[in-house]
Amino acid sequence: MTSIRRWLLGWLIFGMAAASGVAGYGIFHTAREEASELFDYELRTVALSLPSNLQGPSDVEHRSPDLGDLADDRVVIEIWDRAGKLVYHSMQVPMFARLREGYSTVERGEYHWRAFGLQQPDRYIQVAQPVSVREDLALTLALHTLWPLGLLLPVTIVLVLLVVARGLAPIGSLSRALATRSIDSLEPLRLDGAVPVEIRPLVEALNDLLKRLNTASQAQRTFIADAAHELRSPLAALKLQLQAASRDGTLKGEGQALERVEERVNRIIHLVQQLLTLAREDAHPVTSMVPVSLRRIGEQAVGDFSLLAETKEIDLGLECEQARTPGDPYTVLAEPHGMTVLLGNLINNAIRHTPRGGKVDVVLKRSGNQVGVEVVDSGSGIPEPELERVFDRFYRGEEAQGEGSGLGLAIVSRIAQRHQMTLALRNNAGRSGLCVDVFGLTAYEA
Image (cartoon, rainbow, N blue to C red; front, side, top):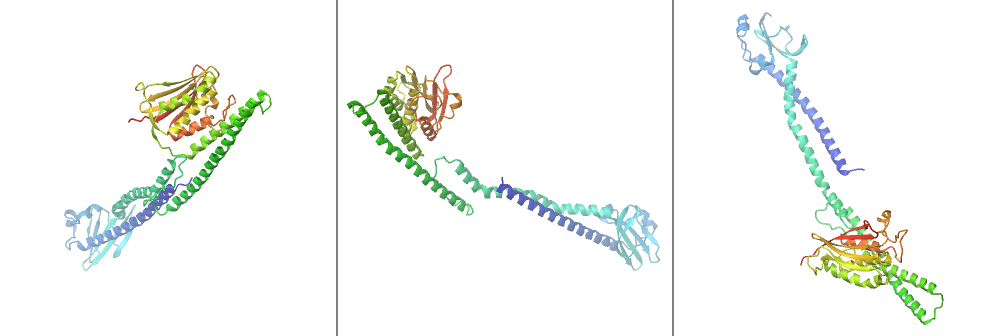
């Protein structure tokens, strides 16, 4: 995968390194050439500065000219008189043959020497110096000229890293803004003055896409809601007519056939109601949280399904664990209608899948500042491989019984997601039945 950051950093750093290498090479060789010229000038200066009385064996044995720092650089001095006789020679090196006047380079043994000859009226002066000494000194001087470049390169690389990171920061901010968005959040991205001009077309294109997606999603939700609403009314009327015809005898047929027809109608009505609830939940992705008593909602839900539980001889009850007071309302920040639908679907599912004479418990619980609810039944439970799939819409297990539509747990999952709660299903340990745990509501302290 191509990375703009790596591409920019790679080429910028490579370019700076290559430019610095070329510049360093040029500076190094220029410095060496200038140092060589400087040493030639020093040889000429030495030749011109030699005293006129520097001659004779006594001078050779007892006195050397004051050459300053050049004495350590093995400078060889030779002087011939007007007659061509050698009258002075440095002791520390062998003698050279008399060379031509001016600059010249000669080889002496394993070494090369740089020499300068100067003809004066009464003598000829020749000054020589090893080329290796000159090169060592020139190399030292050239390296001294390169240290600012060596310091500038890492500083420039760090500056490039910071500048590239700063320049690409808006793209990172845009990515994080999109990554942290809810799946239902289709509002346009907000533009401010900090957004670079180069990124504005991308943001505007994303906003246009979000707008079109929001329109399509809204149209889909509206269609589902309208279809469910339009289907619910005629189905309810059909059920009423079926019941009326069954009572007055105008509908003739076997009792089992009528029961099957009524069962199918009830199932279709339940499906339409679930579709309408799911469409309503999808149409309100943003939840308005208000203080609500979870205990009151639980008592109301248990009361609403008590008749259905009595019909199946199921023991339906509400329990309160970790209550702070005997009448603890378990007040939480939630959306009242959503919590009512959530508990209603959980209790309805538990009753439908619990055999006659079973038990369903609705348990309110606390843990620190978090409040949740468990619905525990004594039914057949769910096979372990199907625990993750039961949240899919219209999915019903192979062993599912009753008039379920496969939307109950999907609606519960949708509401839990809106409230940022954790939803977990597990089979009861050591006994039959299923436990649905919904936890993560924030307790409200008045």
